[in-house]
Amino acid sequence: MAELTNPERRMLRALQSRDSNWTLQEVLESCNWDDQAIAVSAGHGLANHGLVKMNESSKLDVILGSEGESAAVNGLLEARLWNYIKKNQNVTMNDISSNFERHEAGPGIGLLKGLGVNIEGGKFSCDNAELVTKKIAERTDFIMSPSIESPLIEHFKGRKNLIEIVEAVTRTWKITPKGMAISSDDLKEVIQIAEITPELLQGDSWKNAEFRPYDVSLEASMPRSGKSHPMQSLIERIRSIFLEMGFSEIVDDYVQTAGWNMDALFIPQDHPAREMQDTFYLDEPKEINLDPSLLNNWKNIHEHGGDTESTGWGGEFSEEISQKGLLRTHTTVNTIQYLAENPTEPCRVFAIDRVFRKESIDRTHLPEFHQIEGIIMEPGANLGMLVTTLKTFYQKMGYPEVRVRPAYFPYTEPSLEVEVKWRGKWLELGGAGIFRPEVTEPLGIKDPVCAWGMGLERLAMLVLGLDDIRQLYISDLEWLRNQPIL
Image (cartoon, rainbow, N blue to C red; front, side, top):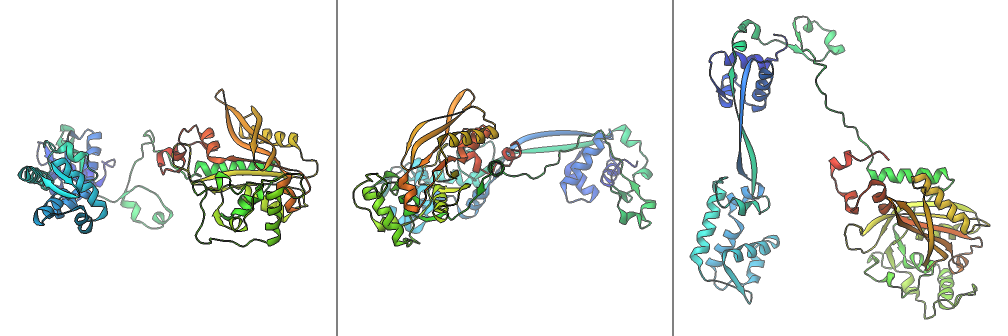
């Protein structure tokens, strides 16, 4: 019986002693095993060989969860609160908050209200204290001895981690005539070898051992190999496209000043985007010093347009506001600084990085997300070059139908919005334009600058077919395994 494992041999040898049903506990005791998994596995193997007949039955049962086990020792939350109220005179909400954990007070009061306890003016009262005590005692009895048949089962199923509904499986085994006919000499336990290794062949132990057979017709589990997160894969894909198109990548800091983040882009200092509801201003560093000459250039541009033939925004420019520390709200803050450091060198650069805004979290918004940013600065750069570059990028991404339409942004003129056709509809994916003179001239930039930006998460939703941006950041391993390699 070389095809039988040693546990199967031991179990069959035990079952041959009695032609009747064997319970799991009887098998464990007869075979001198402590692990149920060994007995169940051996039983399945013998049943597959037709040497035993296995019967299975299952039923639902209830066991205590982590909170239930704690309640069995310390008491249910409503029981502890009720006992405290009964033992003390004129208990108020402040007393509850002072003597119970913050995460217990609110839910506990809700449980007591459901039992008939009233709260008026911050004080507790009850019309039928005996009924409350009786109901809490019934709940306590359930926790001490949970039963699937109890009418309280629905109540406790609605409370987190107090109980768990499990399926209890009962198995019995009975030897078949085929199993009874096997000689006990064939059921002796021997050394069995499942894998041939160089170390094994160097000795002599294999000569008297049995080799486990392999059934090559059985289905094998598919190997699971690691792969990049779909967001990271998309970033790498976009990065490779830009590099292929002759662009260079730039990376810079998350912490910036309001000056570089907004003033440099000719965004007025009273613009709604500067308010606290849109921007994360910092307490540390609260202020970052900037070059006085740079501040003076921005001041001239904002107040009266400087030498650009613009009228500016008027009003009074505040250097204090300009030097406030914040988390960048877009990646353009980094490309504009790159241009300021290299005002005369033609360049084609891009960035794919995180930005931060005070957004309410929903299926299309997050307070932390990614932006894709690109600029071209060279003599003769123009709107036609910008549109052609954008169409080429999206075609390489797999979206050949691209169109642009007029738009407005404070720091570009003309300005465009870029749309691609997806599932028969035009979807807006980003903005683009040519930097205004009010942006470039204070930094000493003489050549035209084509610029564009788009949200990476929105593009990811398009590529992956998602309707909720939050799915990208949920650690759902099954969903991640099923994502295509981008």
